[in-house]
Amino acid sequence: MLDAVVVGAGPNGLTAAVELARRGFSVAVFEAQDTVGGGARTEELTLPGFRHDPCSAAHPLGINSPAFRALPLERYGLEWLHADLPMAHPFTDGTAAVLARSVAETAASFGPRDAGAYRRLVAPFLPRWDTLVNDFMSLPLTALPRDPVTLARFGLTGLPPSTLLSRRFRDERARTLFAGLVGHVMAPLSGFATGAIGLVFALAAHARGWPVARGGSQSISDALAGYLTDLGGAIHTEYEVKRLDDLPPARAYVFDTSPTALARIAGLGRAYAHYRYGPGVFKIDYALDGPVPWTAEAPRHATTVQIGADSEEIGTALHDVSRAGRAPERPFMITVQPSIVDPSRAPEGKQVFWAYAHVPSGWTGDLTDIMERQLERFAPGFRDRVLARATAGPPELAARNANYVGGDIGSGAFTGLQTLMRPRPSLFPYNTPHPAVFLCSSATPPGPGVHGMSGHNAAKAVWKRLRAA
Image (tube, rainbow, N blue to C red; front, side):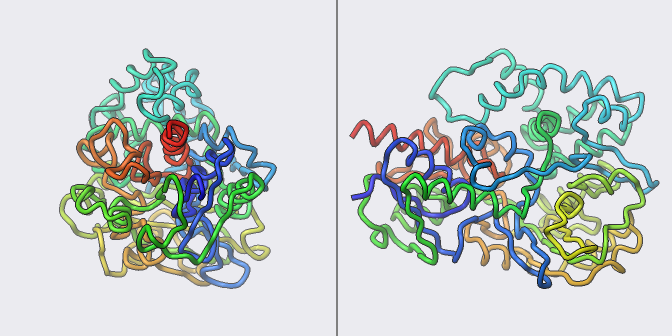
């Protein structure tokens, strides 16, 4: 009998398996797709030689993850690549604000009226970032916070809606960039704890950057899989699990799946019936005949570029999708251009480019023209660079990755209490009503992103049970 079986070979499932194998437990992973990766994969989606990331492409939380930093992933091929700028946010007047590694450079891009306000916002937290990130990304109740004063101060700053936090800024440049940071989790700007979301992304960029992985996001998953194999763990791909009886006998079962899929497979009935999924996304992967022709200079040197003319436009787009249930006319978009630091991702002189916009859950329309018109506002002539495109709306994304219910790449809505307590109000979020079954996906704390911390935290709950048995 195995000690643990993990269902799903995304970053969280692989991390959970690694953490258990490191402690001497026998582990096997079962994945429905033909390769490991989940939300961290790399494929030729458009033309031969163009290697795209079907989901996550840039990794501010990955490079800052306490779980990843404790593992020897570099020995297994993981290399982080940094552009001159982690992120840029262009405006229609041909200028841009930036999220740079330097706080001073970032503040200067906002203009003199907001430079001091931004420095004061991040100053209490950045020197204590490593302790802070451990405190809010780790398993609840396992230990007292290492720095309770800083954690409490962070909560007071970040728990209110981002619209309140943005009042610290007098001009639109800072407000717009910060609104875009919040938009990464598809949450309305007026939502609970959205200030914390924006602040986490900013601090992560200042602390260690906003890199891409050499060769694509698949290299993160491959590094985890390689380490797991060396630890004696087994990985089985093309193995779809429909019920627990499909799996070999084990002392514990750990699911890197959506809560509703877990309930169906494990026979937990309506255990997660009240879990809410968020909006979907419409994603386009491009093969380009050269770099994106940004009007502003800064986006030409950033791996990630946010698209939204101002905070009002971003707020309207997020409201349309989250509250009104309609696709936006001028969408907020996140774009990533890995080729500026990793030429291996495309043939010589060409580039891969990735963009997505938010749409209602399960939306079946085509947002290509609207997204490209939005891009043309900031990069005139963009369409002339397009060699090929691969589009994926919510149905295609859900078919590609079963965890993306309705196209929700965050595996759960960031609204109300669910922002802080996922997948349901509980002091033990990784446990389920079945004593031998655990959940480790992005539906558990600390939430979405390629960081492995949900898997790391769930593994702690699992080995606590195994050692007590």
